[in-house]
Length: 250
Ligand code: PGA
Image 1 (tube, protein in one colour):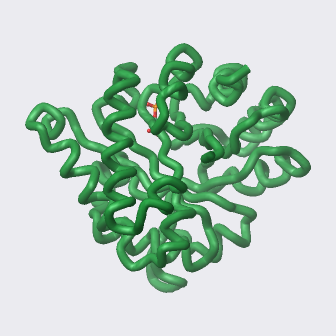
Image 2 (tube, helix red, strand yellow; image 1 turned 30 degrees about the horizontal axis):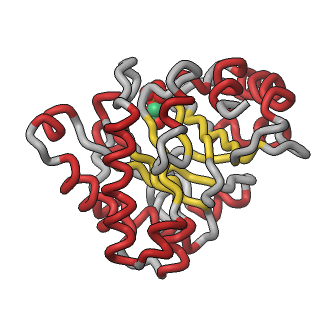
């Protein structure tokens, strides 16, 4: 059985003081979670959050990582820097990075390789936009994004990657994929992984849904057999909401 994983993606929100307050409020609310709990925070909040989560079941994540070990890459952070700051997880290839910052499947793959090599746990985002879904390209697109992103990893490394299926049209829009749509596309991703890396790894790899997941729709989504968790944007910014998502099974 796959252990569910619920991760908050704070995006560009929360100063260090706000981050500390949010995590302190969250800690007692999620302490009995049956799933893995992660908060992916802005880099300026790493120190505050890393301190505040000591002794709790909350894990620290970043929202991006560069592929080089060091060098002339103004504004970027290396995987070793994230590790040294106490980061365990990193989101790679979020659609906002692809859309606004020129991320391509190739650079996503480079970042995944660098993160895995440094021992970070990767949350790899894939997903189609509205036009692609309407044109019927969803399955081919998510399969392609997944295979390119994982290229060059060993089988064991692939098994540890967490994939987040995030239909772009559902992110921050209040539109959620139906439970069945999310389950179906996540099934496509799982079968793609199984075909390339074997049935055992296909069974083992954890695949989240993301896109306007919230306390109201979490139960239905998590009841689907293929869905192993969520990547939560808006609803992760308030402790009561995020804890309701994390405690979807209670
Ligand atoms: P949302 O964001 O929950 O606000 O739609 C999800 C995400 O972008 O990861």
